[in-house]
Image (cartoon, rainbow, N blue to C red; front, side, top):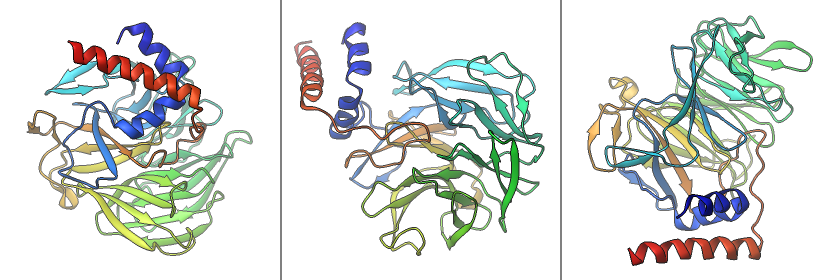
Length: 362
């Protein structure tokens, strides 16, 4: 497809592109998870040396944080590189942020700032001026794991030496309050379209649900060490997904609502490696990390199985899509894709058909 045609398709026909991706699936199919429920798709999105995904630019480029170094990376919105026979989204730019302390996660607030939990406290970066040193907005420090934005503009994050102090920072009032103390290490934190908060209790194999003010709703046990989470409140029944340490992705259905225990638990993917922090995308997909982590918590002794079937210790980010359409709640600040008009859909289909005919003639 000519570059001009692709840009027209990407930006003018974005709603149709979302629908088409759910109907046709991603361009390349990764083989990281040896089992995948047929209702879903998988694609190796990025690798081999990935950051921790957690935020997105306004142009749908994934933003990730490099653990242990003051770097924030942006991934290209379209595949632009090949590794081990796999079409990947390469790093477009690396931002080295002065003053950014050690930590592992990142989120984007409704005010446009990026927020990062660190050993020094919750820090803020202005993506409109990457040269600006990171500002420490709270003094509650810790290992810097879970963080996410709430629809009301607040930031929920984990602090303290054991990553057990769950706090809510209000950027408007510049207040920071401890709202919940977890009994064990909290890894990823996810928020829903309705303001629910989910805590991945990686330290004791549990998931905890809080309301938007940090009040406890419930805690329930798990079996595969949850790490990266995504809500699917638009699903029927509503659900919560977990990227697990044991190379699985688990779906928890809440047919009786999130105030009651899960009514069904299903492993929708298995055979992967160590699952870590994850994030939903504006395309309603689930972006999960895969690492080699020396067998911790029963994880597999490899990192990634690439499209050419090479298995090595490289890390990767896997895009999990849903054939049923828009499933996972998009990040705060991104709207659920609207239903497509027939005119836009017809135009998008004609473009795709034309490209396929061109490929068939080659």
